[in-house]
Amino acid sequence: MSRFNDKRVLITGGSSGMGLAGARRIAAEGGAVAVTGLDAGRLAEAAKALPHGSPVLHNDAADPAAASDLAEAVQEWGLLDGLWLNAGYAAIGPLEEIDAAAFDAMMAANVRGPMLQLAALSPLLAPGASVVVTSSSSTYEGAAMTSLYAATKGALVAMARSWASALAPRGIRVNVLVPGPIETNFRHFLPDTARDAFESFVVSQVPLARAGTADEAAAVALFLLSDDASYVTGSQYAVDGGLVML
Image 1: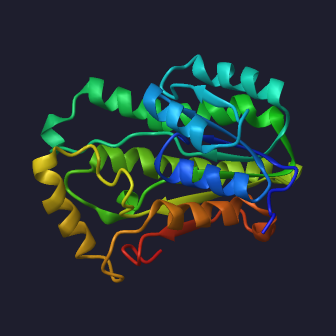
Image 2: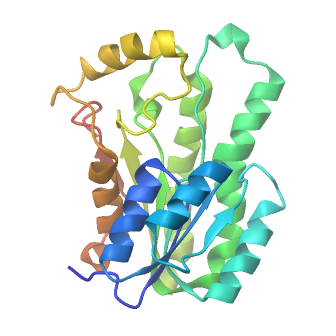
């Protein structure tokens, strides 16, 4: 398959997990791919995993200045045929433990970051480009411990619907990936002692009775980024083994 021949795709949060799995597949299908990340070690590993010369950029979505920095780097690279807004992080805890600092930090990374990134990168999207936004099944699970994280990922769904309308006159599509329990970095924000029990609890609710893989989630993102999804916009695609039945 060569769905990405002569195409440029940027993946934020692409130095590990689903993002890196997608980046590797785009390169294998003939595309040029750039990724962003925060962790120096993961960025170094991503540089090794991708074709020589692939832009691997340190970029913090929570930093208000990072969006313009990213746009400047992309402008030197060329117009984008695909943009996967995948950067973000998760944390869970009781409602009573949420304070203003925790709220502001997660909203900055998971909501303001993608908003400012797309605003800055919009002029650099080629006609007919595709944008994919990573949400989460947490938006729909109603889990007691994930209210703040779910709120940020629900905001992305709402924003993406408006972005789909705003960018449609340029032939640009915007769709949402809704991953459920994915093995790579799955609930990595939990302490080791709690992770196994929580993962077992979540997976027990999945009709397919297992967690998904990074490649399985990336495969759906790549479908949405490719011309195979040329008549798909404003939609949500769940990759969750049937957990929320969107």
